[in-house]
Image (cartoon, rainbow, N blue to C red):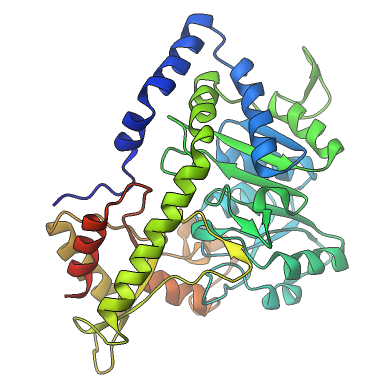
Length: 383
């Protein structure tokens, strides 16, 4: 059996006629940037997420930049975030010549630990960027309370979590600004790069719309230093089709995750396998996850002297030989990356993030994994 990690081809074939008709319509109209489909998508996203403003843009990375530019992040400002995420979260802070200030993560959710935020706040701190890692939001009540106390802005990096909820509210509607990514492998993905910025603040929304088109307020009149961050109309057309089916796809993702957990619990029954223990994903009771990833942890069992990393590497090789792709999200925390060496962090500064990075392993995850595929994956994982 050969498993497809994200199974984008299957999804395309499922909605093929609708998607290809939508693309052809854009091509024939020759309105390739910010056409009618982009404006339609923004309305559809606002309705889906329960937020006043959805502003589409060219990528999730550009969405982060637009969000920070909108709240006037300047060189030397400090922005608190997690070291255990994709690099774009901290990279965009550094790109604006601000300073990423890392805070260690919660060992169960892998999201930023609110209990460790306040000690990192200084007179230079301007914002907190929690990441909704693997598809579930961080502890937003605690984070928002800290932000309110210290007059800080909150930008939610929801690149992996569009459609997730915290206490019944979509994470796109939380914080001062939220962002998401429509990279093809995301739960809601387009056929190239794309992203969106969300806010309930009318003033921020107007500024973000302007920043997205080079700070323009009307043609060739520029109020701000902005960027070229517009969304291609073809990508908007694809997303309009896929968004119509998204609730169904999310339900399927959650069912796949439920089956993974159920089958693995049954197979494991609290025992070690092949010299390692497996820890299953944890979803906070306040949250729903969109399961961007189904990530387990591989830990040496008692008396096994192998490192977690070597165990994981060996397991990945074994699974690959059986046609089962895996991924590591993420093998090196950001504070240890060469590009952030100038920040002065060292190994041991964020022990939980470092520990998780050595143990984490993502299994194939998409709405269309069959029971037979789940059985095959889990059998080869534990037997």
